[in-house]
Length: 465
Image 1 (cartoon, rainbow, N blue to C red):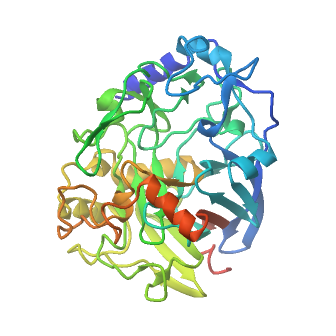
Image 2: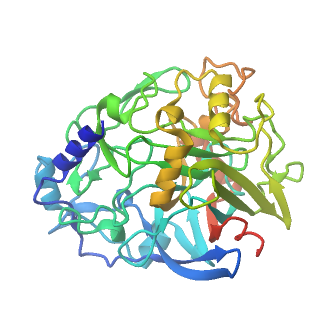
C-alpha cells in the first residue's frame, strides 16, 4: 500500500505547472501569541500567525477575474485538464479587511474568534511561509475556548493534522503554507488541488449517500484523489456535547489515495489508509450526562469560557517513547476537573488508551476497528512525534446534522437505548442549516473563540494560569 501511495503522489506532481498565486490582493495573516512552557523555567511567548485554508479562497484565471470553478463544475475553457487548469488558475490573497469583514475571522487578545457561517478553517504559521509544527509526545497542549453560543448541530473544532510543514510548496505550488495549501486529514478529503495540481478528474460524477433518515441523496462533486494524513481532534464540541478523538493512519505523513480500498468507505467497512471513525472520548456517550453542558448543574459549564488541557503520555515518560495514553483535564473558575469516567465500560477509565479504545469498539458493537487496523496509539504517537499542524474551525453539517457528535441517535434505525448510540441530548431531527440559521436569528450570532494556547512539558501549562 505504501508503494501505491508513493506512485500516486508522483503522478500528481509530474505536471510542469500548478495553481498560481494571485496578484489582486495582498495576503494578510492574523497575529497570535502562544506560549512554550517548561516545568523548570516557566513559559516563554512565541509569535505566530493564522492563515485561512486555500479552499475558501477565490480561484480565478491568473490574468483576469473569471472563476475557475464558477458553479458545480470547473470552467471547461480554463480547466480542460488538470495540467492546463493549474497553469491558468490562481488562488487569491486575502487582505486584513477580507479576513474580518468577509470571512468573519477576528483577531482577539492572544487568539482568534471565528464567526459562523463565514469563518474559514484556519491554520497556525511559524513565520510567513511555513506551518508551526507541534511535537507533542510526552507533552501537553492547553488552550481556552468560548463556545457558549453554539447549539446542537454546531461544531467548534481545534485539532492537529500531519500536513506538510511548507504546505507542499514547490514549483507546482508556489503559494504553499503562506496561502493555506496542503490540507489533509483522516477523512482523506478530495481537495480541489492536491500538491499543486487540480483534482478535477472524475469531477462530473455525483455522490450518492444515505442520510440519517435512510434516504439516498445524490449531489455534489469530488475529484478522483483524496489526501490522507493522521488527525488528532483535541476538541469537537458545542454546548450540548463534546469529544476528543485519535485518528491514526497506516501511511506516514501525507498519502494520496484513489478508490475505496485506499481512501476508505464506512458503509462497506473499509478503513483505507486512515481511521475515519477514530477512537474518541465523549463524556455523554461514556455514561456521564452531567459532565458537559450549559449551566451550573454540569461539572463543565459550557455557557462560560473554559481551559482544556490534553496530555500525551508515553510508556517511558520520554519524547522518544511510545504513546500509550491521551489524558484530559479541564480548568474553569479556578477549579481543576479530571475527565469523567467511562462508566458504561467494564474496564472504566477516563482517558484514551488502546485497551479502552478496543473495549469501547466491542461494547458498542462496531462492525470494524479502523483504529486498531491503522496502528492504534503507537501509530498516532509517531505522527505526533514527527510534528503536526494546528487547525481551528467552526462548522455545521446539514447532511448528517452533527448527530455523530451530539445526537440521541445517528441513524433512523438505531435504538437510543442501545449502548453507545446516544452521543448527546440533541433531537434526531435537529441540526440542519435551516435549524442553525433560525437559532442565530433568535439568539444572535454564533462563534467560537480560541485563546491562550500553551504547550510544553507535562503539568507545565496550566499551573501558571
